[in-house]
Length: 371
Ligand SMILES: Nc1ncnc2c1ncn2[C@@H]1O[C@H](COP(=O)(O)OP(=O)(O)O)[C@@H](O)[C@H]1O
Ligand SMILES: [Mg+2]
Image (cartoon, rainbow, N blue to C red; front, side, top):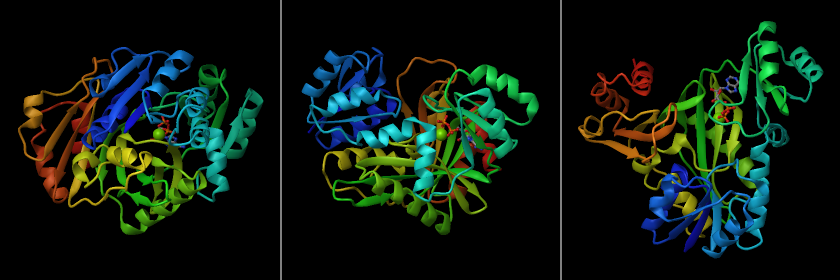
């Protein structure tokens, strides 16, 4: 099958790499001419809103998908006139706007932190009255990796936050004093069959996912997460992979946000699961049977942000896998990841000990999480 993607970053690349093993071929539209997915298919360089680019992309494929939720809805609607696009545009619309997303979660009876719409300074003051400090002020649109949000710990933070974010439509939400953060990833096919991955425990540094560990949560928590994500998948009659980010408050889950796509917290599934999140997205959208999400051990994923430690050192140990996306280094940029697989967490800890001399902040975060 020929599959087109809006976006040609590492997520599109890893989906294409999974799909090529099934015999599919790939084309991508991305404004960036040095996009890393170029080595996994045909890259068309144009803005997502470029009608000619969209037409060429549609002509190149049988079905289309997108690698991230900040693509233009009109572009997806344009594509949809020419060929089937999965996941559908309704899911995309809801996930692009934090307010619409939170209202949907509420409507589906999914627990989440208190929130209020903020369109003016007066709204913000009223929202704080209602929600109280500490709270998090977020732009409704285009936020990712902790960008477009500020924590308000007290009245002293108000002016700075308003000065920085006041020009955008906003949402204020209660700060959640969670025990830890997790995510569940699931895939749904055209007939409504769903497969679920075991939840990951996700560690963030400065709002950016840095380390994921899976399977981490006890069965009761996993069951809650499955129940919540099922409601979202069924609501949209969703086809493809979807991720639900969650706050774990002592065994009770609160939804944080939905990503209508494969997720950084599921990169470990390439080596850690029978069938990865990337392959299951391709299987779902192409009408194939979903693959098994079983894993026979545990996995830890390290995100390489800004720079990647020496390849030789990373590859010395067995059960350690390096993915270098081939991107130009920039401070904080996601350049690659490493997955460490073992039979149990003691095994992971032993393998992590081999990284001890690396002073990379990701390694430091992982080691401190296990000490
Ligand atoms: N209401 C909140 N309470 C506590 N921490 C939060 C809250 N909202 C966001 N965070 C922290 O910031 C991270 C990024 O926020 P998120 O809403 O997921 O935005 P993004 O789209 O940037 O991933 C979260 O994973 C969490 O660590
Ligand atoms: Mg998030």
